[in-house]
Amino acid sequence: MRQFFHFLLAGMAFTAIAPPVPAADLKLEARLIWGANDEKETVKHKPADPELSDKLHRMFKWKNYYEITNKTAGIAVSQNCDLKLSDACAIRVKNLGGSRVEVNCTDHGRQIYKGAYALAPSQWLVVGGNDTADTAWFVGLRPLDDKPSDPKKAISKN
Amino acid sequence: MNDDLEVNLELKLQAWLDGELSAPYSRCINPEIVGGEEASRLIDELQAIKAALAGNETARPVPETREFYWSKIERQIQSQAPGPRPAQAPRQAVWGRWLASLPGFAALACLLLLAVNPFASPVFDEISSAGEGMEAVTFHDQSAGMTVVWLTDTTPARPAESPDAKAPAPGKSEVEVE
Amino acid sequence: MPSQPDKSALSDADLARAAQEGDMGAFEELVARHRDKIYARAYSMVRNEEEALDLSQEAWVKGWQRLAQFQGGAGFATWMTRIVINLCVDHLRKQKRQRAESVEVLEEEAGGVERFMPVTMPNPAAGLERTELRRRIDRALDQLSAHHRTVLVLHEFEGLGYKEIAGRIGCSIGTVMSRLFYARRRMASLLAGLKRENEE
Image 1 (cartoon, rainbow over the protein chains, first blue to last red):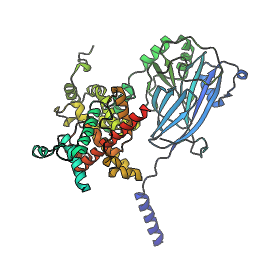
Image 2: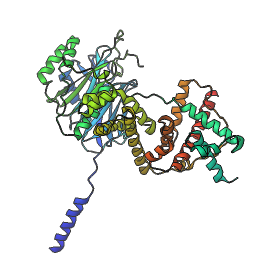
Image 3: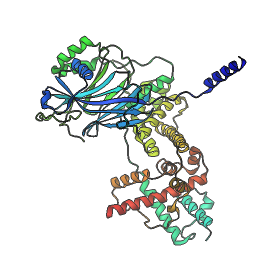
Image 4: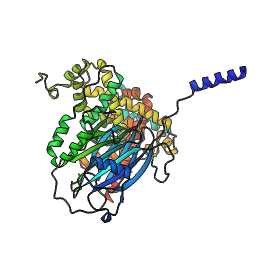
């Protein structure tokens, strides 16, 4: 009993002096979506995720939403991650810690937007704008649950 | 020749050139007398580099807008000091401009006003800025679990291209990249 | 209509005084006026845009906290520059501790071959148009180690003397002299190399 008590005390002391667990990487997914009224049969891109499409439908006027790119990334705190979503579209995401990110969008290398947000679990941050011929582009970011990411897609760089 | 003496002489020549030697000492250092031709060439090189660098530092502006750059500083100051946070700039003016200038989005705006309270204080502290020639409006749809930032290109548009089912580019494709 | 003067018309000294009284708007005007200079100084030392942004913003926050210490003698921009320099020096020191030294870095720290090379091109900047010269200097600065670049930037661009540089970076005057000497010779070598590259 005494031994157990000593063990318990030692354990508590260790817990008290143990260094805090470092903040985990932020895992997120980024999707480039195209909104258009073109019929699905004429478009070579696959339809966007139904859940995201549904949300976009509720907000925007376009009939169909297509997924152009889908990438995932794990970003350490204070690190940046560059994601090229198309020939023209790239984003840089910086993990500010505490689920906050800074998002920098560029079009052909020209910065068009920069913002800092807290990403709530399972909630989308969408940046969008008009594109030619009455279509629209959307970049969606969402934090992922803590599960192993696809090593082929995972990017974590400064 | 003693390497240590050579090294010391080079540094003394440099110090003489930089005006760092005290007056009595500097009078002892004359490159034409001390060190010979090689020392003179060294002095010439050091002088040339000094002259090349003087006033030729590349100007480098901050790669962020005034507001965005300041907003991060302001937040850090306020997070470290007691006192009330300054009032947030109201979004009403931005909304008003957006609604007035884009009649095509009037129906969308009505839908948003029904689904979203645009004047509700944000759930989280956010800061953003649009690039040059762009305007950004942010709105939160709590029920859909989505935050949307809509960018409008305010530069004059060129005639639209014909429809094409290709990968889109952010912003107006016809806007020239600088 | 508010009767306060347009802040952009006020001098730095007046804005600093107002900021010392707690006027955040006055401080914001000072930030707007001098942000490029402070950022550029940070960038010249750390050569990384993100780090320079973070360090320059940290400098402004420190400037706000230490406003009471600003006496107005040296000029507000100079005072802020000193703050950002100190932050950059600390930052580089921390980076050096974290980074394993490669053989090349250690060799450069010791002085490198340029220190002992005879002078081959006394004026590597001769004949260069100013924009081109600035571009080459910028490229060459990227290739110096942090130690040598720091001393060069503080001496050549900030006009600090050996003793003040030694005090700021925490080393002896002799170390400042040898680092500066190496940095200059390396710059000469790099500029000469860039000039030869261009002529080929």
